[in-house]
Image 1: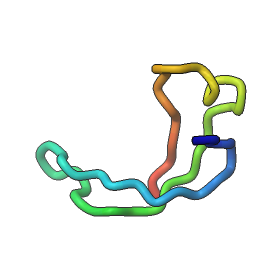
Image 2 (image 1 turned 30 degrees about the vertical axis):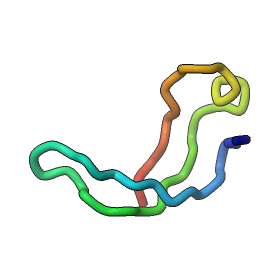
Image 3 (image 1 turned 90 degrees about the horizontal axis):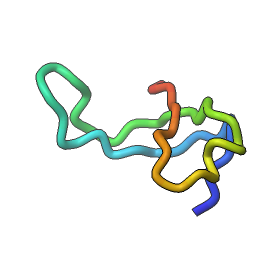
Image 4 (image 1 turned 30 degrees about the horizontal axis):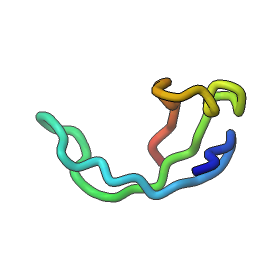
Length: 48
C-alpha cells in the first residue's frame, strides 16, 4: 500500500474508546512521504 501526503482515505475508526468516532470517515494524510514509507511508524492524519 502506497500512502502519500495530502491524500484522502476512508478510515474505519471502530473500535474506539469513550466519545471517539465509531464509524468510517475520511481522513487526510499529513505526515511526509518519507515517514509514510517507514514500516511500523505511526501515520499522522487529520479527521475531516
